[in-house]
Image (cartoon, rainbow, N blue to C red; front, side, top):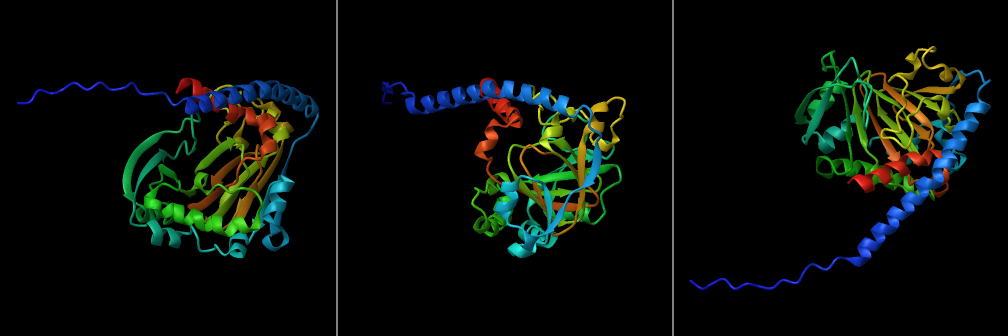
Amino acid sequence: MRPIESVDRAPAVPNIADRARSAARTVGITGLTATLTPIWLAHHGATRLTTRRRRGSTERLPRVAAADITIDGLLDAGRPVVIEGLTEQLGIGDTATETALRTAVGDADASVTFHDAGTPYFLYSGGYGAEVVERRTMPVAELLDLVLGGHLPDDRVVYQLFGPRSLDGGIADQLDAFDRAIRPHTSHRTEPRFSGVWIGSTGVVTPLHHDAWPGLLFQTHGHKRAAIYAPTDRTNLYFRSPLRGEGRWSELPGRSADADPDEFPLLARTIRHETVLAPGDAMYIPPFWAHEMEAVEGNISVPFRFATFRRGRLDPGFLRPSAELLRQRFTS
């Protein structure tokens, strides 16, 4: 047998350019977090003072016809609004509907999480007592039967997000159709790769939170109740410190309207905007507006995301994603 010859291998040469870019990103995120922290503290104190004598109220969110607005006009105005008939005007009224999903991905298997109906809260992280009772793999068509056909047991709820990489690219095709329809009508960068399709059962709640990006929530099946608050009310909504984990979530109950006024007295200062989304409606959610959703019935919706505005990176609300990124860089 021929002896195995030893081979001198040169040590791997570190990619200096990649390390430099990574270091630059870390420095940039650290600097942004350090800059935003005093801005957030000043905003927190100022809004607490300016709203201390304000009597809160509940208002109906304005509704407009799609023919009377432009997408750029919505994004530039920075105010939430419900747009009626936008999917039809864009030519995507048959996209991401029940029928479209059954045709496109009905045979694909999905890993489905069932939660206890007593704590019907969807969250990205932490809190609210949400309890998983079962995980099961099933075809999407079966999931639609359960959620939209009323066959889900009373003690369970489902709220399932399908991103563009899921279900063998079938969801990406649906989101690409939205993107192709929207892009000609806006100068803002769209981000279909960060968008998705929600399938949710009756009673599921997404508790109060805020995002750093603008988005259009398209309702394609069923009805969904929404509440939304301006960034100036964030101080009175009991959000956790953005320097902690779970900074996007509020300490209010999962359904904020159920909050005990003695335990959460600042909530009485806020202006709450409410609406019910029907199939064909789209709701514009500006960045940093705190919002809460509840499924009135089994429903499908498409949160379509736009890139974060550059001007928004110095908004006090951007401290939360900035701090999250910084935590990830030092803990990963």
